[in-house]
Length: 297
Picture 1: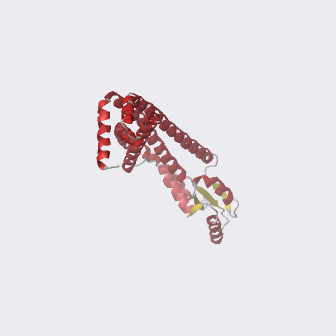
Picture 2: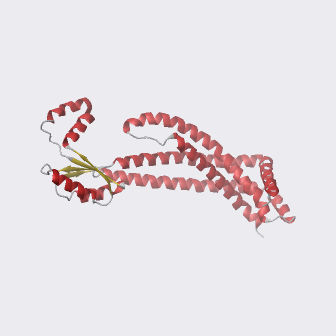
Picture 3: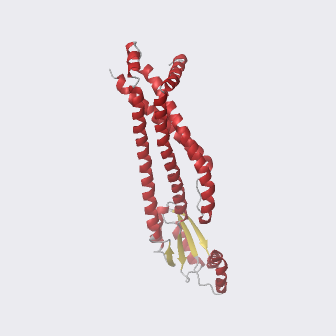
């Protein structure tokens, strides 16, 4: 396509937006509402996914070593654990370190446990992390069969329910976002279709004077692009501002629980790019699908 022809299509697309003011407003509003819902849902689901991932990464297996095991037995046990498929890392914690950690975790109340420093009743522990958190149960069952393993703890029962809940939450979130996208496409396509139907005569005249389908499509293609981009502006502004304040407020509330939200930067900029691309794609798709019926021979 020649540069002059392209410039002509760009001018025509902007003129059309101005001539059909109310229909332009309706189309942009449809894009705005749907992308606002998608943006809000996307922020919620991405942060829930971040929290879920953080919780998953905190899941660990604590292998309590039998008090009868000597240093050589512990070395052999550590080697056996490292050979299990799916192991990320293994960290040794002596019973002295375990007692110290317990005292610190209890604060002032932990001072009472200092009496056990001379006669420590705790076990040495191997702290095991898996590459895939969902393999925790399988790996724990393998480890508990080894010699000199007193017990294996990983939150049995609770961990299974946690992983099941996380999986369901992610699937439901994905389905809802996809559903919103299809709803957006349907609404915008129908809104743009009404706009194009009002210009049916204009299209027919262009065809009568010999305009090709491609020549007719280009202004509508660009029009859909501008509608999608314009419709993404308000959702980006609203979601960015809301997330800025929510991030500051909730991060202070959640820091005691070792949970962090996605950093404002670069998350908001990534989200903005996604919304613009989605808006443009939906606007173009709606325009092309709507004008297609008028271009059939």
